[in-house]
Image (cartoon, rainbow, N blue to C red):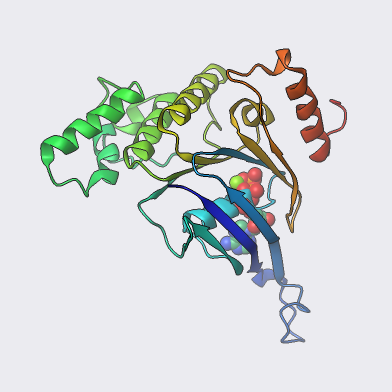
Length: 264
Ligand SMILES: Nc1ncnc2c1ncn2[C@@H]1O[C@H](COP(=O)(O)OP(=O)(O)OP(=O)(O)O)[C@@H](O)[C@H]1O
Ligand SMILES: [Mg+2]
């Protein structure tokens, strides 16, 4: 199960560098930075949702709160009807930067999420299964620094999937990859989503990725961020933006919403 409901979620920080000392009211001190305010969203079980928005609008913060790594200032998040307060092994987060532990091999990194499996043979089979799934067979005992960027990202994906999470959070998972590797790993994520059918929430700056991958897209605006666009994508797969006028129109609309009008 992986149904997520976000109710009236707000997040603000106290920016200590902007403190005015002649008042005790933090609002008047100008020290409160509201990242987002009154966010209400729902994610269906098994849905792939992509979140787009300008840099600094709070996408990573939202994902971190959803994953239980950070706290909201107000509002709540319910996963399968239960409020989340802290990180749960049912929810895995693929980090923006490399999330592999550099002192551990691919095998050991994948093993990290499988500590609950007591039977050693079963555990080894499961580790191998996921390493094979992300096509890293033969690289089990390599350290992250011995792998290419794309291989590292695949190992990270294998590690996340091995946990068999209800919800997979991905924060710009293709950033820093060369173009072809980006496309290949994107394809792998699409295939895995159709294969494992888990809820996936992905933050990306690549509008085309969102249009190719998502069942639904969500666009946020500048701080304090709000959801300014939400659209279900009922296009058949595999998708080709250039051959699908509806997707081309949607791409123009998203660009416009993000304040880039020259493409339309
Ligand atoms: N610990 C913190 N203290 C104060 N402000 C913070 C903190 N963490 C994040 N912020 C602020 O919250 C805002 C949102 O940050 P966040 O990283 O969520 O943005 P983002 O949408 O993921 O940006 P990007 O697309 O560049 O990754 C930023 O303006 C940032 O300065
Ligand atoms: Mg971010």
